[in-house]
Length: 234
Image (cartoon, rainbow, N blue to C red; front, side, top):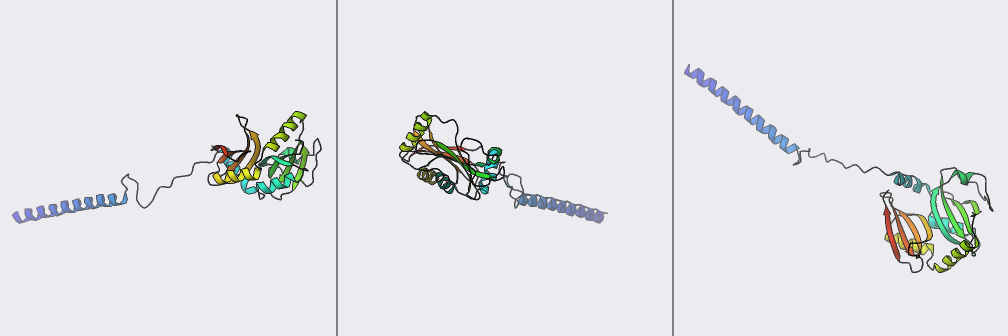
């Protein structure tokens, strides 16, 4: 009986030891497969990019459609007006108004209009006396498909604009270089404007194709210095 009891005790002891070893092994394996924060190692969690806003999504869709750069479109538009100077240029989608029959005053359609929703450069070019002409340039082919004198321009408006263009010693090309040296990206708009302090400036929009944010850089139209820089993350 003593022998039998001794054997039984040994078996129980061995079983308990084996169970303890198994438990320790499981704990060790779990520790090796978990990071200090409790997440498994070897499978890093990826951070999803935030969704694009409506404006960012529109820039992402529109900009790749344009095969003609801003400077080519500007040069094309200016050639349509004798002694013309660029006042405004913007990359946008062709509206139903642009594809409709020409309106007044002095409309001209030298080439067929692109389909509605296609990319175009809409330019405003001033003649020497300040009369503004709207020039629509196909952003894919580079062809002018509509020209028209802007309506409702009185003598005072024309004279004021002509004076501003004479004061703007910095060209739009020079202003864009200043802006893009500061902020890398695709130029989508250039406009002659005045700020709240009545400073004459070129407002240049530059879009980053990394995050599709738009940065507006205001460049002094007389000395080429940056007056303001604003990032639109909407």
